[in-house]
Image 1: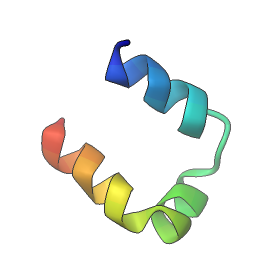
Image 2: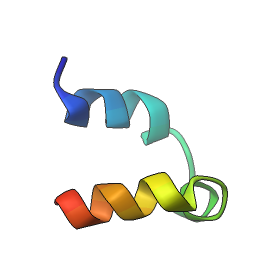
Image 3: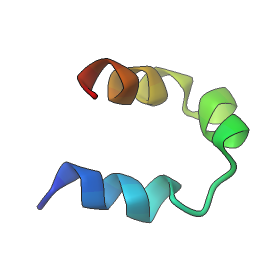
Image 4: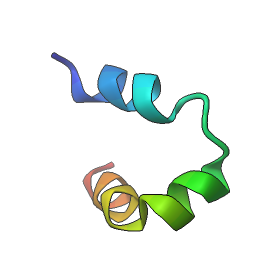
Length: 34
């Protein structure tokens, strides 16, 4: 599966601040990869 598509499914509907605050470690990993 394409990771980007999975990210859209998981995070696409979430406010960015929610993602940052509740998934900070994973969010940082996404930022470092892109």
